[in-house]
Length: 306
Image (cartoon, rainbow, N blue to C red):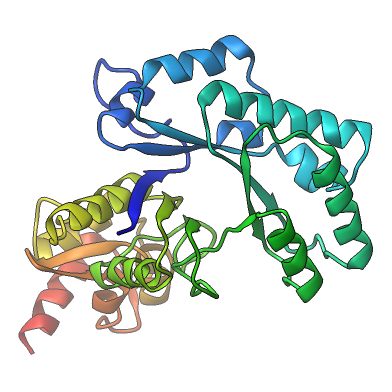
């Protein structure tokens, strides 16, 4: 049976009144991917405070600083080894089993760069920490060999692609099918992610949500795994759920095309048990400019009766 570690990229957006974000987050989730370390180098007291804030059985993983993956490159230089060492040091304080590397799509891993990466990984002291590597360029046979030789986990976005083979460990960072991280998952998409994990027959799955609705998406997936049912995304159903979604940030006057583009990624509750992307409902509108939300709602009310 697969052990699921479900969480998000960072805890800063998890807000509970009069309670620190990380403490509140750790009372709801059992796992987080530290996003801060991709941009900054925290001092030891900060990292120790993170560890002390959460329960003993709470799991951290750490994102590698972009200096290594986007600036220096994966090569065996003193600077690269120093950054790698600092990241491993943070992992050890947090008792984090994984350091996550992300190399961008324009970081083409040709044979020379693969040799450099092998030299770096062979030289650096991992201290028992395992690597998960999200390669956004092509994984060539030689790169695959490197990852197998070094027991590096291939980190893939299971909301966009299947895992290529059966594996003991899955590490997936979920962004969805929208632009950048602007997306929210419907029930069927969360179920598809789960099926891809189950088909891989993994012993452990590290699952991190990264969209603009990441806390909701992760909570709904967690609830589904615990109960077999999905939570609603709002306090309303039908037209009232659509109105609530538009009232968040829709700007008028606005055309149908603009509404679909900027609002269609959101999920609304048609009924207690049925959710759809707002684009499915907005596609029923006529091609014209709408002056306010009420005009949109009035037309959708008519269309749902037809």
